[in-house]
Image (cartoon, rainbow, N blue to C red):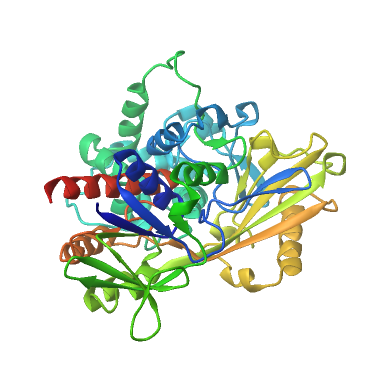
Length: 473
């Protein structure tokens, strides 16, 4: 029977493992840390449920829901508390509600935009002109900044697109690839000649709600936090298949598969005293810069290409307060901050307002975001200093002037890939180089999407490829 090695144990690895388990294919997961799960990290602290990494997923990318159903967590799906729904943008010293009908950065309703004080009148007129502008004639890649400025104007870029989009992707809009990140918008421009026309058409095509299906909000989570997903995957896979505290140092191609040089765990010794394990196929879920080192001896050119990708570092800072100490109204689900405001935080989410089961009834839990190409130096301050920075920003932006009950800092150094202009071309070259090594699979957030759904899909796709190769051999 063919053996498969999966390097890393995040959600892409878990999805691949669950799919391989369904297909009856033997595999082993290797994780260098003491605990599996990757960036899906949830902690229960003094009655609070605190997310260190992602706190939600987009059900529109249905692969996550598919995985949740496969592992029996459908009853744990958690909707946002949409009675409090709303996104606010900090601009000019105050919080402005994102006008109703603005879908990411595209206005689909006239009156809410006209009534909003977020965008100036010249900026509103410029956004409206998008309806009449001709589409781009060629299919070359361009940056998010170029695309949005060309279609909707500079003010829309700076006050809406950059904080909404670049904040999620923790990257600079000046070099973010529009083809890699928002191919849907490029397709709208080509098909309809206008983003506004395309978005309105897409909204009209949305199916009516199906009362027989479980209710879904735009963002979804799990009652026990996002780590609940990887924990359940690992339980389904079986802990005996996961070797934690086992670092893979090299992947070496051999005549009948691949040899892993292992630091820790079991296996035969090579001439240098390193332990070895042999597998028919290898799935690398590690970040591209880690994968680069693993395959360097096997394929220097592939290694060099993998190392070329840029990465950003971020931190999440969760802070809890007593509700009675908060003397201001906290609007919507939280706020985002455009880079042009030159603040030291990027966004803050009112976690226990947005989600149930996150804090005791008399308390408030919030989560602020730092870094992502903007004041990344703050990540390397000590916890007390970083929390102090966040509290000062919250006081000046939202009027929160209260003593915290507790705080928790999570740092993700080089945790997010940057899909810069030309990403798809570089990806095609990686695929070409990887094609020289049948049975080698590269998955995870480095390649075809940073979201949980994208990572899950990459795991499912790798499992399908392995099953096809098994049938054809």
